[in-house]
Length: 235
Picture 1 (cartoon, rainbow, N blue to C red):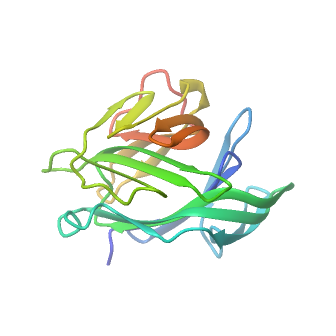
Picture 2: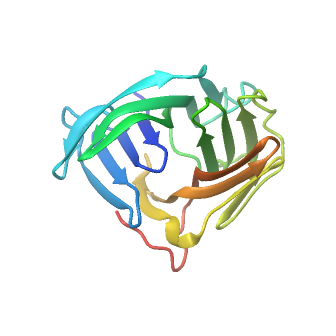
């Protein structure tokens, strides 16, 4: 049995819905964004990332794919990686989250699985309404050096050996930089397969800059094994 599995979708700047299984426990998470992001978590039950209800908020979404899937990490590292990820990097979502109607709003979705989560990571993703996208990832796992990779709609996945660095509230991978104000992050606590806690901070108001991209409203995450002092945690 896989140690953990996660499926999520993000409607850029609007909502993030996350289904996860760690060991035999399945949960559903609903995070909505705005001036004050809100988060709720509960047993998955019959909920999926595309249809469900949690904490009095119902959602129904369907996706139109604008690009082919992207695999992470790079193929050279998959035999030893503790986590695998397949991202649908450019989608348009139609439906609703609570009382908010959504019509062909840009976003993306992904499927992650593996023995355990990475030890730490910095991540960012931007999807534009015209189908262009950019994806950055730098991560550490036990027993291996940091690995970093980026890809865009114009540039296939780089080798996993570009320079990557996380200096909250910034993440740098290769020629790309993404940053957001600390007050825009929502903090969540994930449970890893060994029972330990991962502190994950997520913003939908990041600025991503790199070759061919200067985007406001990108998604970004900083995740680590200790909390960031002074940063708020919702769940």
